[in-house]
Image 1 (tube, rainbow, N blue to C red):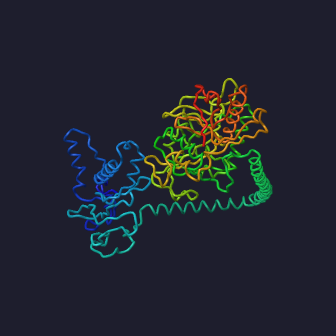
Image 2: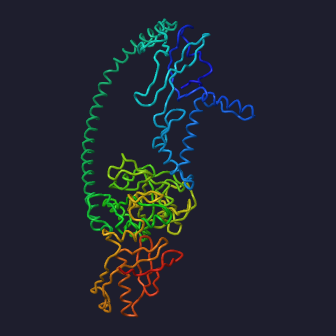
Image 3: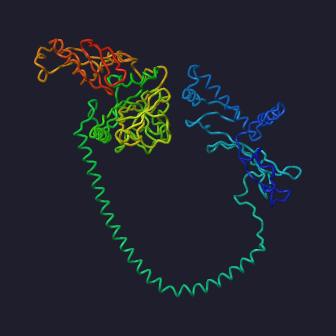
Length: 584
């Protein structure tokens, strides 16, 4: 595309052509609409020189039209974006992708990757002009799709043929008559000398043929030996394949012995939908809303991958066998351009170092405490890539809420050279993970596979709530639905495994909950039973303890049914929260 930007010396292009013949070259360049825009940059450069500023001589003339269309597109998108969101690149990009207007350089639309959709190009013909010189002449335009070309054949001047033809003459190009170069006889003489030398070489080769025959015989014996070794290797590979099948079978048996999370249901699917009528839905929503206030969940899936869960449980057991607390946390992870199915559908590793990118603490797998941090690394689902998930709607993103085995962690400053956690000088063993703070969130980095499990895949959007995607505004509103099944339930405490004083217990309709930063949250079923048991024991016998230790998703807590307080006994601040019994 050298039009208006081709080298100053065009003699090589004209070489071999008579002064009255046309070179016949065809060129293509970004669409040049009219002389006003073609002259825009040259006028700008003159003004810059006049004002003593450094001009931009390297820019081609067609850049003016591109600049005008780009500025118009950006201004239109910014006007369509609410003022509060104009610093949000994702919001502005969504409006850019919705644009469709006729610009200076043709129709302006953008692909999801940000390229111009079906850009227009000018077609030019390099021909002779008056005075014996040559110049590029506009002969039409074309797009990137078949059938978009608009060209006037009468305007094309073909090499060695001329102008004004209705059709192209042929695909052949005029070639000058061959002439025998002066160096050819010299080369022929050299070849003759080489042939004589080759004849003597052949005689020497014949003498060595017998030696080669014996060597070939020996080589054949070696080949037979290699074949025997290959056969043995094939047998070994079969043994390895059988061992892998045996390993897979043992892993499944191990998973059955270890058990699966209590929230799992019997389903053949890896992705199991979680609806707004489920308690899990609102637990994930509340955790997400702590740092993304205007977030809404459009789809939530629980990942039920037994192979991955078994692999994750293996790493958890390995930590405990080495007297290391697993320190399990629920953290966020965005897969960026990688489709989440690569993680949740994998039968071996899940989160893999093979896909890890270089980060602030080296090449590792990163997880964040705050959803607002992982939001910047969320995956944008594409319809053609979500065969096992519904097609996404406008501005929807996806990220994981994962379980992470932090183990023994060390807090470090940013160090992009890290490849593994450092060694603990007190034990001589490596730390299990690295942690630090960036962009307002604590992050954890692990440098091996199997240390995290993708517990939930969250598809969400930010902004005003769309009732067709998010039918309920709150858990309280959802609990009024006839489908509500997990929030309100009857606590029945068996007296067979309690203290004698508990024989006077009565079943109560309701549930225990604690006050989080985003509102009241119900305990899970196991902890409900523990707290209710402690309360009724204490109510019947004043000498019974009023405190019970429960385990949450991330921390351990002391729940005191006398003072109605919950205390975090693992956090350095020993955070306290109110508790209550919510009667139906």
